[in-house]
Image: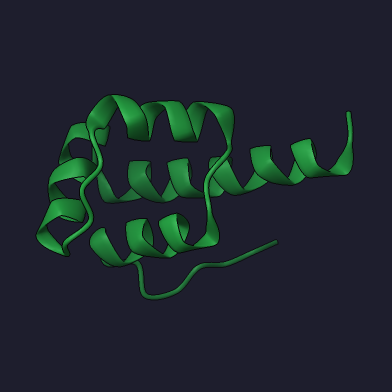
Length: 74
């Protein structure tokens, strides 16, 4: 497996873990993103996280939407 795929999976897993820790579903995330002006559908979010293909901007938008103030990267 190439390094990019490994990193994509790692970042996706980090975001999924934060969603789980906060108790936020994909549907709730879509609503929270809309609240900050980011329009994205639940299926689209699910696909992005499943594939691990999303931008750093999307990652930060999600973290802001679910009110993550610190992210530990191990």
